[in-house]
Image (cartoon, rainbow, N blue to C red; front, side, top):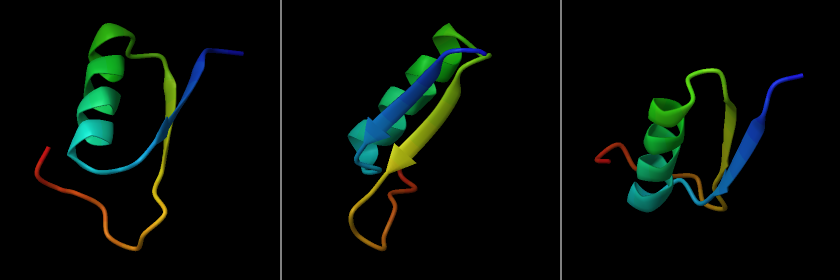
Length: 43
């Protein structure tokens, strides 16, 4: 099983963290959790 990452918060910071994690290790399974119904698309 590969490495898994969970990011709490899907705002600009969470999206940036996910992008950086993916850049560093393309094989990661990344999940983002957001409390609200809106997700940032401006990261």
